[in-house]
Amino acid sequence: MAENKDNLKLDGLREEIRGSVRYFADKLVTGLGDNLQSITVVGSSLTEDFIPGKSDINTVIVLGKQTLDSLNILAGLARSMRKRKLAAPLIMTPGYIEHSRDVFGIELLDLQLTHQTILGDDPFEELTFDKRDVRLQCERELKATLIRLRQGYIAAAANKKLLRDILASTANGLAPLLRAMLWLKDSDRPHQAEAVFKKSATEFSIKADFLITARKWRHEKTRLEREKIATAFESIYTTAEQLAIIVDKLEV
Image (cartoon, rainbow, N blue to C red; front, side):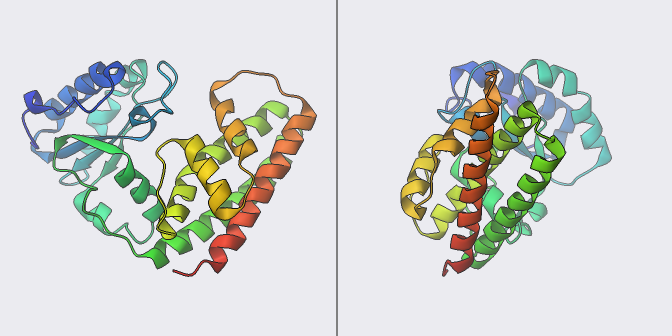
């Protein structure tokens, strides 16, 4: 076991999530025993992007080894986790983290930037990354985003709600990617998504207005006019296209 569950380090968490996180940690310590190495809270619940009652609480669980028994224990907690706005955790091992730095640099950089380890040793603090690997992943992800946007637009068949959801998901996914691009330029990386979009607008000469707007659609039920959806799609697609060109030419 990583530590005794009475030694949970919850002081760095906002008060609204401490009860849910403590419940989850207690269940993991009891169920996973010596295989549990650390529990880390990550993502928006640690930033100003968090919306109580709407935003999920995201975690990373590091195990000594990946086993089906461990997955079954976590699966058994799924219903109670949903009630407490706990998203299904990312399950990793030390070996997985070490050997994923070259292919998942965007994700690991984001975890390293915004995390709070509440049990065990911090698995992200000492990680280092090769800029060439991160640049390549950024280019690959941006070009994949363009493909998904084209396919999504066709599949939506002018369904406004579906298009809105596609654009909201795209904008949300671009936030960590833009943080990685800022990291490539040795620039400060804001934790909050809107601040990332605004800083990237200046750093990369892109338009961020619709990225900011579309990301908010994840938690809004507002009906949108077809013209606004079309304008947002064109703007976000153009932004992703521009970023793909920028990162392709970026020297690291």
